[in-house]
Length: 148
Image 1 (cartoon, rainbow, N blue to C red):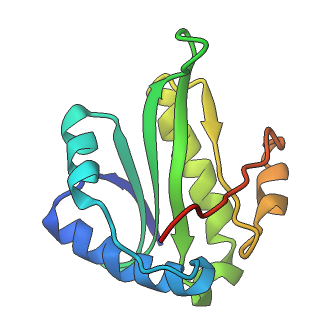
Image 2 (cartoon, one colour):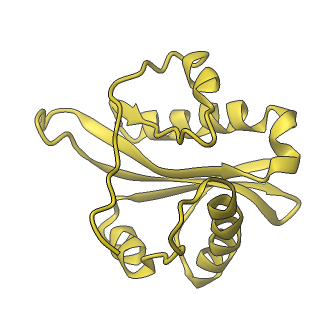
Image 3 (tube, rainbow, N blue to C red):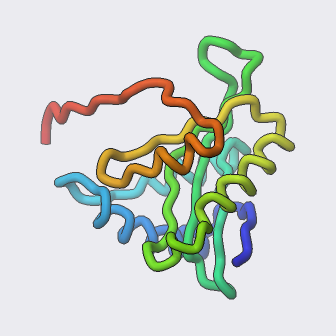
């Protein structure tokens, strides 16, 4: 396995799209996946997007993405807010996720990040993995669909 931080380009977008489709099937809601790639590329151009990858040979088997920005209420705190994390199901038993999180935390820390937020979907709860790495529950987010 190889962990890396990669810059978003068209090729990586296609690879991530393939995994996102599988991820959506696993945890998605009852609406279609419609990735806003223009925003991702804008964030890449702004220098605030971080994409971490897991590859076996050259095949993408996992990824995680973060937006880096100052905290909205504490400007002196730099936050990495997780957008998404996914590892193919057939590779989850190999403890890749834990090693992957350790890897990306090291990179984020070297970049001066003070806080990392990770979102856990109810349909795919990996909070045990996070609490083992000293993450603490911070808040609960509720969703209400208003239209569509």
